[in-house]
Image (cartoon, rainbow, N blue to C red; front, side, top):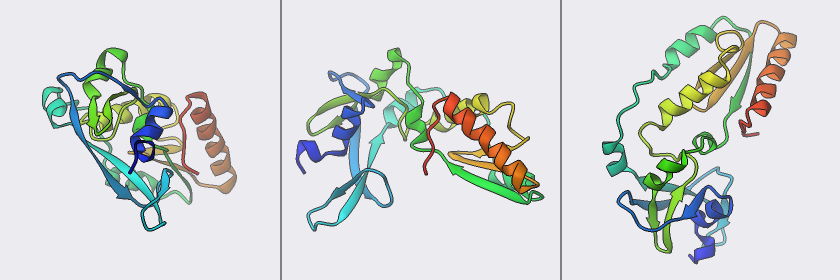
Length: 187
């Protein structure tokens, strides 16, 4: 794999990461194959592959205070949806990456790879408080729609209602909110 083939290079081009000098928060990186992802490359056998960047944030996660913001339980979400007749499921696209890290904290996400060290500008998978932060953001974005027409569970959004016409109306409300807040969904 050459430098330009490395999955981190596409992240650098998209300004998700940037080069940074070595610092005390350096975490190790491992790149592993992943199926069904948008980042697709050909491997040595000319097969299409995608890659998942895994970062061991053990040191940072140990130092970070645990965010005890409550996360939803799937059984509670399913119970609220049980009596509804129409559903529309939406899936967030790289949801953690849609949350920006403050400039003063970006250096803490430094990762090392064979070619350089980089820091994230957006929240990455593996940070212990990422799920709580994402949940807090989604509650803020959809506060007036929660328990009325949408349920949020991790990166899944369920629009629900009793009739097809109302479901389309609620879907329009949710998609409008996504556009207003730059929340990107998979299609």
